[in-house]
Amino acid sequence: MTEAAATTRRSRITPEREAELYEAVLDLLREVGYDALTMDAVAARTRSSKATLYRQWGGKAELVAKAVRHGKPGAFADDIDTGSLKGDLHALTLRADDCEMEQNSALMRGLAMATHSNPDLLRAFRDHLIEPELAEFRRVLQRAIDRGEVRADNPAIQYVMHMMIGGFAARTLIDEQPPTQDFLLSYIDAVVLPALGAPTG
Amino acid sequence: MTEAAATTRRSRITPEREAELYEAVLDLLREVGYDALTMDAVAARTRSSKATLYRQWGGKAELVAKAVRHGKPGAFADDIDTGSLKGDLHALTLRADDCEMEQNSALMRGLAMATHSNPDLLRAFRDHLIEPELAEFRRVLQRAIDRGEVRADNPAIQYVMHMMIGGFAARTLIDEQPPTQDFLLSYIDAVVLPALGAPTG
Image (cartoon, rainbow over all chains, first blue to last red; front, side, top):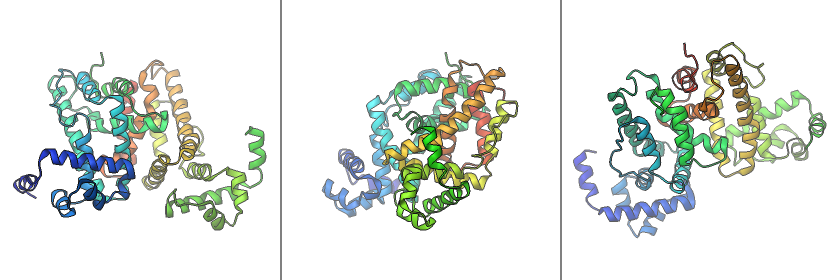
């Protein structure tokens, strides 16, 4: 689909109505999980026609991924630029408080699990949730390289998302606790910045 | 249960029979997944009585976790001690070839997913799969500290498993590929050793 076509398609519902739909999808997702969530239920809950939902989002996977993206704390914040890599990574973490982080982490974990048996969800998850985060990390890292904080050829640059996802995912398995701001800030200072050879002070 | 009681209980079946049972459990796990796997099916497949299975393992969660542990490449290898942290971490990685790693990674991912709705599995997963790995990393790291390769107060020491799990888990989500030896060796050299301040050369 071209950008122009996308704009035409999107123009059929207002941003307010879109936000309302996403909220309803997130509620359903928390109630029944991805596999049991149906477009019928979304249509009923939001008093929409299924035709509208399919025209607007193409299918369940894209609708759910976009709803989760929409609900992420800071998803629409301006680009973060504090003047240091440590400052930027901390600011990215501090966009969500511990309660939002726990809720979002549960949603992301549920979706990540569901991707294993739903290839279309894996694609939507990557396009709408992983890729935007990667793009944000790339901008933050590029500025750190431009400032001379990180060497452009540091091999850890390509693994920043792997490190961060490890902090999130392993926290539950190893520590039996949801990720918190304190944990993530400590993990960034102990692991991410040293691996990148960036200032930790 | 005391160690003595455990020994008495375990002595009722031979190691060969135990290995045969674990293989059957792994086959069933690959066929139907954790949630659909029943003790009835294990009993039928292995021509055991359910009473024996429960007496020996207590329940499905423990039986499955021990079967996965038993099937892990290198689970029974002697302690690795190559003389350097880089050598030890590489040797741990090289115990499994790419095919074994992909199979094991799929099993571990499936189990990690199932832990979210099965608290008893989360406990068994931690006791029999996470804890032994953590203990192995602790031994490897302690020797690196003793050799002066890593400072005892380096804050990244407590996050080695988080980093490694990130490498495994994010590989699928970000790179859409199973972890391979090449990927993990590169990740260890780019992320884990630098975060620990250990020699990478």
